[in-house]
Length: 288
Image (cartoon, rainbow, N blue to C red; front, side):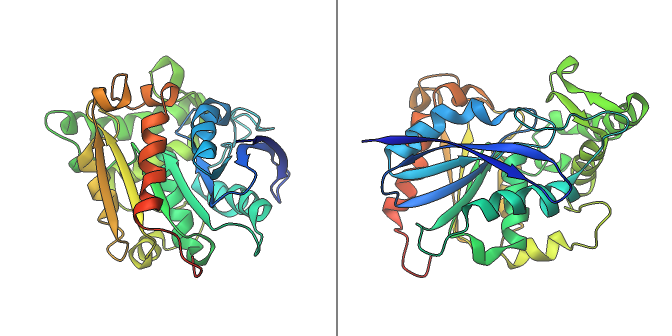
């Protein structure tokens, strides 16, 4: 099968620029807009895109503001949060993929990418046919197992404070993301404390939008994932009561590597097979 390598220049209305990387078969049965985890550049998912493209799914890798090919880097003078992602960047990537004659479009993501994929799909429900989540769940502290959950409220207060004091969060020093914008960390931590999604600086009612989303959802969780345990994924899916959902747990043997939050990126075949298989089990229809 011939796989096309994609690298398309995209720009948001505020001037932010990045490349939409991807892989596409000649005649895709579906297309996927994929959102990375916090601090992970889009290029790290190219093996995943290759595996999906081999299964007939054209995969387009969004780039987070401030990461990888992004023209911006967070600093004291350059800050952003969910508002810019949901209202500036993701609409620009979506516009690049809009085509009435093309194969149905799916949206999905890894970790924070999956959370914001849910939010964006909820704001644009007619744009997408399916929702795919990998190691993705609400960061709400009560959705994590004991005793881990008891330390999280402190972390959700400390990290925004530290980011505000430093101008950015130097996440690589903490083993959490890379250099991250303080507004992004504030929005994320607010969900961790309240279990309510919101984009500071907007009047978007993300919780109501999520409750009304009806896209079929497939979620993959990993046996040893302390950042996205099954409980947090179930709590995220619970925000989508109108969305038929299926949760699939993968262990080490299925992945061929440790089944944790990040190791699958280097051995993505099993995850790609599960996701592609969800289309075979419930095929896309004309209306999708």
